[in-house]
Image 1 (spheres, rainbow over the protein chains, first blue to last red):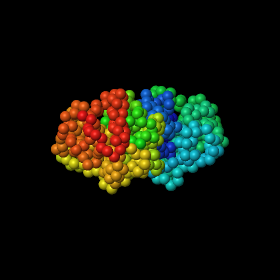
Image 2: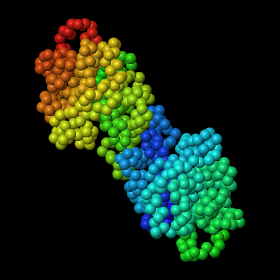
Image 3: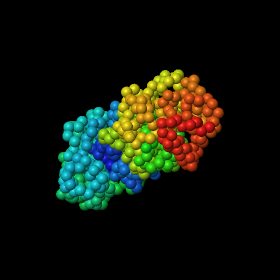
Image 4: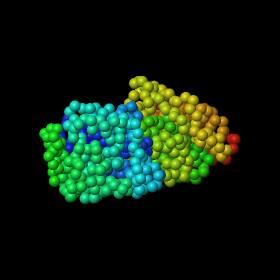
Length: 320
Length: 320
């Protein structure tokens, strides 16, 4: 069983690739909820929705969020009524938030609701929130402390990030905790999501980083940086603001000591000389279409399998 | 200043006619909130919305509720997700409920919110909820006690009504109470709304019936029954089930002792011989279009003015 850790668009793409390659019982996708917030009285879980919509094949590829072919009658009317319209909710997307909010108010857990909504979309693979309790990420910036969506959507990541405050003392969801302890666990794949905004909140949950490491299975990250740029989102901007090299080497620095291997793009082949203390897989990582997603998923899964075939011995050399 | 009491479609039509004829400072429309309920975590005020949408000129005349030219992407998606879809909420209409719910949660009163939403629709006339506190009407039927919308929408008024339980000990909203005491009050117009479901809940509020009567201004009702039928809604069915004559005479019986005059349709002219203890205005009351609404509004306002011109003397005779 493979445990994938995912956040937004890039993570969702690889998660979709993994779900196309692995049967449901061999994959669980644990999703960041540090971006979750209450808006218009609704509980919104952007990363869970991005993963769900992507696996369901209905994600809006143009926008990078929401549902393909979406309509905006609700939002347009809300703006006319003087309501808040900076966080745009499509008419179909809204059904997700209304139904989630109603079920939470009825006492269901986010885990149960996420599974039910995924099931309604015909998704057989497990999509698991990292936590059932709120774990809001706070962005510290040159404009002060900002709630995550205030930074990410309202301010379009314009403020200069100076640091992140991840919610302390939050337990992983029961389902996530059970996956960490699952005897069938064969590997952890850190999807090419933003390490700071999407992955660190998962690893910051009580005991998660240590318990995953203690399992002794290969932990492999896929670099979200290709040729010095993030495919989507503010990862590159944030790394630059934090004084971190905007490169696969910078990603290696970030995860060093926790991951066992890093997957980097072919265009970053030169980084092999830079990252000498970590196993590397050099392969195309840009996911433009479904074929790219499947190929990357197969490459990463193949690497995990190779790891197990090698037993306790290290894999001979980086594929370079 | 005219105080109009209104409920659903028929009441909203006359309210719109009155608002076309009277300037904003000379009209206040107090609306039933006995139908209000929580659904999908949203606070829904059907009669307030019907009056607001009608005055804004955007009411859906085909459906009799909601907004003209509405789309249903939200509702269709919610049904796909397994959510409750028996109470249909259009995409634009939904903005009203989300914004109302958000503002109520933020501590604003239903009165304030209703005024703000009416203002956003460009309505200058006052639309005032009968109460800020919940005042849910319970329908007693041959299938037991039903929450109002369970009876009205989910069961499409199919159960046989045996009685109504109006919320006890609810105060009128501060704004309604102020209107009752307003020295400028010249008359009360009971719109052709369902007497049982729309008007009685208003009159059942603490002290309302007595305080309005004590003002000594003419109280005039417009019969919602024309030629033995309700123009819209279950008024005729309910009257039959309660053993009341389905006629203007039945409406006169219902309001007797409280109203000073009843407006009946020309087709019910024969009722003049039946209703001998009450002043009557016989005039066309069917409102098919805006011209009908204006004509009825002018007829009713004219009758109120005539009352005042007549001073303490009764108006000579029913217009028959």
